[in-house]
Length: 387
Image 1 (cartoon, rainbow, N blue to C red):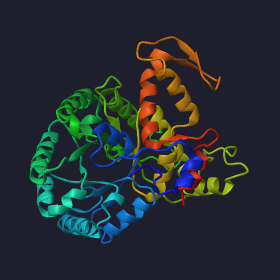
Image 2 (spheres, helix red, strand yellow):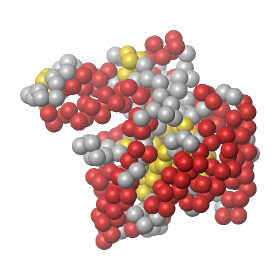
Image 3 (tube, helix red, strand yellow):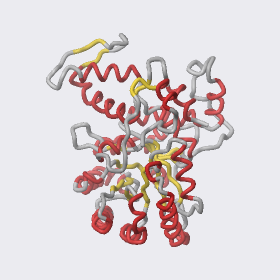
Image 4 (cartoon, rainbow, N blue to C red):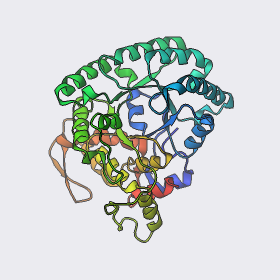
């Protein structure tokens, strides 16, 4: 699979200076962490789940989480497990496995991991891994040990994505110790962890908060502070860090607005005014702003609960031609180089040593999401990917 693989080769050539690379469930873990992009969540209770997965893959989704946890009620769990197994078996029978996104299951308890692996049988070949909810140093080991056992049972690699969302990781008096302890547990399973996810909805719940569709997570200072601390512990660029995913965007229908839209007219003027109107009507102007703030704060990709959120996440993950030019200049000096270079776009300085980690991360993003042609911007990419 690849990002923008749902577009025709001619469309990709028109958009990309460097097209996104192919990847799959067996790709290196670090590669998959960057490649996840917009990870679409779906309740495991959906009776047309197999068809939904096919439909979303055809629309450009490359990673999905099938949820047995907070998205369904306690009473629905047995039926959801049965449905999940049934839908995986259906997908296996359809024999079009290369077209599937990376599939993860969000479980509630460690025992579900080994139970599901046993019940899936050969259909386990379609499963990439599990999402571990409310991950802490106390709760995490049991899930990760169950994952190890499931690998032995299935005979294949299985990945895990911990979700940091517990109150002890938010509360000031326990946050630093809790994050450091969780990181020590995760480090023991580094070769099975493509990304660490943020459960911002649960963090807000601990204080009875909920942001409006006109605000980003970074406008809620309590949330912004914990995002910063998670990146500080888990997102370091010294080789010890992980991909940390952006928080979920909860809204997908237009509501009466209190504040002005965040999208300027000029990028859309004369070519995509209708697209701008649709984005604003769907409250996606703040989503776009939050995606940009995610990247500025060290996050990559995003948890999504609606298909309409996927295209904006991917469009803003593509490396611009200017970013690629700067990164290539910096990396072209070699690891022992130094000094200051004037940007080829003549609008900034590139300081080789301080900007090297950024350049390396940008090069990884360019490999997975591609590099836009000079003159192609997020509006063009959105127009190609959004309905």
